[in-house]
Amino acid sequence: MIDVRILRINFYQNVKEASASSTLLPHSFRDGNESETCNEDITNIFRQIIIKRYKTKDFCDSNIKDVLIFTVATKETDGYKRYLRSIDVYGFRDNLRVLGMGTPWLGGDHVKTSIGGGYKVNLLKKALEEYQNDDDRIIIFTDSYDVIFLSDLTEIIDKFKNMNARVLFSAEGACWPDRSLASKYPSVTRGKRFLNSGGFIGYASDIYAILTYAPIKNKDDDQLFYTLAYLDEKLREHHKIKLDHKSVIFQNLYLAVGDVKLKFESGKASLLNTVYNTEPLILHGNGYSKESLNSLGNYLAHAWSPEEGCIMCWEGTIELNKTIPESYPIILIAIFIERPTPFLNEFLATIYQQDYPKSKLHLFVHNNVEYHQDVINSFMKNVGYEYNTSKLVSVNDAMNEVDARNLAMDYCLLKECSGYFSIDSISHLDNKYTLKLLVEQQREIIAPLLVRPYKMWSNFWGAIMDDGFYARSFDYMDIVKNERR
Image (cartoon, rainbow, N blue to C red):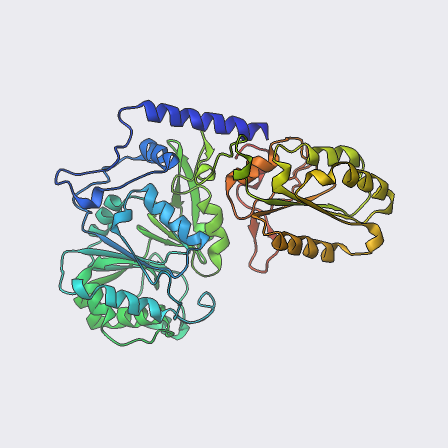
């Protein structure tokens, strides 16, 4: 945990330097016309540093101020927050329009593995009504929960204009959802042949014409809807609809995870398609590629750098002030002694020595080892009263481990805890600030990385196969050897 503290010091040093610099991003970005598009109030100091360090183009480019990005999201999931973060990093939140937020999802269930999503088409159709005759305004549509932007809008628009298309859809290697339509697609000498509806870009009037060429029900399939539009030769030629066969802008990951790799240059990570030698600007984890997207997302959109390590990890963190103990969240510490454990007294001492107000801690202990019962009884008698509450489930209660863990969670809910900290007796907290640091991270779930000295074994699953079993990730060795944090 010493390394974590050092990393924090280094990062705060960057904050200090940035705050002292007269060239740090102003409170608002403005172009020569004082465009409202450039009124960007960036209040997160960490995000300011990211933008200051990596900004290579003017966020207030007049060529992109009228571009509109549409997405559909009904809930603020982790994937949605990641999507917003990538947009913030590249500085075009004002261009974004989110459709459906806070309303029920009407597009069908299990869209990942079955048809559905027509609701997205109908939401976008309604949103574009006011732009239906606009031949010059560029519209970008993407999914949100499984999409990451990898570039600013200027580069995306420049590449789109070089494609000589009025509408450009992303492409993939699978003909979904109707495989029988594969033979009707135009032949492609090189590149992905089939349309994917998770991302497209085009001019407003042309996109609106596609959206209104036929009716669609909310639970009908959106990708089939767009596929039939593309396969309509007259419609395709009239509106110059093309597919991004070589992932110039859009990269779909399903059946293409092996096509891409991370490239680290100039202190940042970018995505390279090694098959077509392109650097995609929008990444989509369609289908069963969500886990691969999560892995790549740990590095992309300036989430990680060789110099700072995990930059994204410090966003949204808090600093607990030990002089104001009442501000600390209430945490339940759940201790499980499920097998004979050496140095149990030392283990319990590290729990007691955690630098966290005892009044803000509930203690739950489950002991399943008769040999250790006297030690546990002594611990609870000597220090248990210092905690807000304490509960012991002893070996005499004959409760199995599964039931004990469920009971601990129920106890946490009963006490209306803000957090649940579970630890087994075979793990030692050598840093007395461990609990405080974990709470300051403000993450929904944090798990430890446990390794065996001089071994490549760890409890870390860098990747998961489609059947749910372990798979080794591309960065596993670097992480286990503590060379990538």
